[in-house]
Image 1 (cartoon, rainbow, N blue to C red):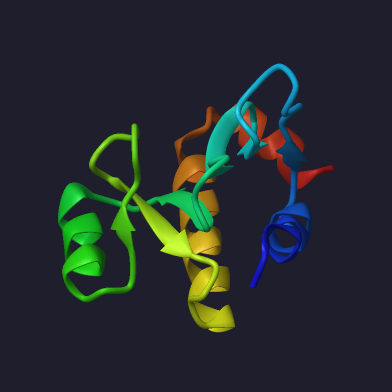
Image 2 (tube, one colour):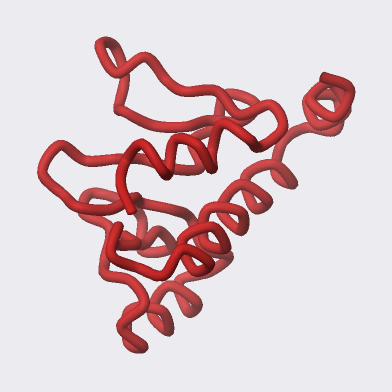
Amino acid sequence: MSRAFVNQICAALPGATAADPTTELDSWKVGGKMFACFGDRIDGVCVKTDSVDTAAMLIDAGAATKAPYFHKSWVLVSFDSAEDELRHRIAVSYDIIFKALPKKTRDAIGQA
């Protein structure tokens, strides 16, 4: 997989917007909140998990590594991961962030 492939996945999610990499981190957001982020020197995408325990489990299982500079609930999923796993981790991250948005914001995105 590649950054372009991840961009395709993220772009298909309702209300997802790419941040301007010239002024912000190269990332994807929903409702102004980041759910996926790329690093300049890493070969993967950082995504949020539902808990520190889930992140630790994914790291222990070899499905992800610690996301540099992020909270412990974020993990780095390699571009070498299986396509289904990459899609799943991005979708889970998106859902976590989306569900934490204010209802008014969620409703506006749902109508977009």
